[in-house]
Length: 68
Image 1 (spheres, rainbow, N blue to C red):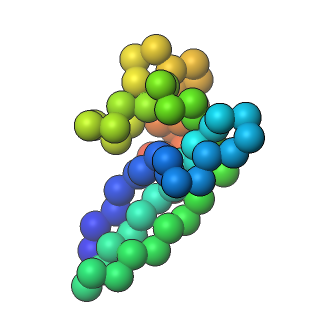
Image 2: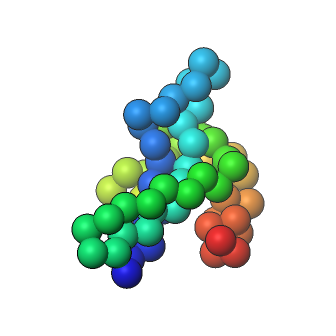
């Protein structure tokens, strides 16, 4: 089983925020669980799958990721 954090570009809301989700993968089956947080696309590093250096509130996002 693998667990990753992703920024869902396919679910952008009208405020141009993309929700963050945990993705559980087991035997090629994927389950998305929302974190209840959203970020602007320019505040997310898609290569490293974590908040970018210029992201406001990145400490809170990292904290929520480690708790969940």
